[in-house]
Amino acid sequence: MIEPGKLFQLEGGQKRRKLALTFGALERDINGIAEKGTEYSFKDIPRSLYIKKVTEVLLKDPKLSPEAAAELQRLISTEPMDELRVCNCARNHLLAIIGTFPAEWDLVIAPHSAPTDENGIVIERDFFPGVSVYAEDIRSPFNIGSIFRTAEAMGAENVYISPFCTDPEQPRAVRSGMGCIETLGYKRLSLDELPSDIPVFALETGGTDINDFVFPEKGICIIGSEELGCSPEALKKATYGRVSIPMKGLKASLNVGVAFGILMQKWVESLEKTR
Image (cartoon, rainbow, N blue to C red):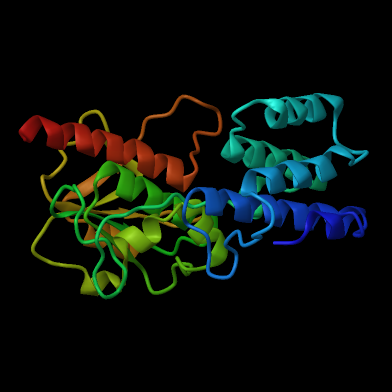
């Protein structure tokens, strides 16, 4: 982190980028998940006062809207000050000025305190045994991170990825995954290497309506690439069937992460009925 006085010496664009990084680092520090070397370490000034000072630097930015300035002034004047909300609002107002979406810059990853194994994967989760997803050739880091986040939230046990799927440890994937990639872990497998003792089905057009599909208690759902969907080989591997989401729109198209979320909700509803 940089001393507030030094921030005044920086010029517009550089100052804004440095401020955005500073507020992001402060958010992680407040949440107790500061990256090594970015912990708040100024001993002569309390963190809350430091946050006020760097926010005051931002308040002098001529591109900050009057509405944003009023919100920030109100937040830093409130006692007790909500440090996390001040930093989050300041960072997002900065990103609006810079013209960058939060997902492209510096999302704060929520902490998890569950015990982990030697690989850093959480070993105590509440999940549905045998419920897995196979991401085939997903190209967008944002989408693969979103898939991991949904899989973890909805109780999948495993995530498998194809040989040509984008790297889940790519920074944008990690950010959109919000800690779930580390929580779940993953295995990179070819279609032929998938477990053969449980049902495999595909999320793809031209299949059984999701409202009529009989979900297995254990199984692997294959989701295909953003542009091409499931490959012919994946559809052949999906011997349990094909499930589709009915749509009314002219485009009749969903982002792969959104489609997977809809599928997982339906699968979980089915599983809850059998518990």
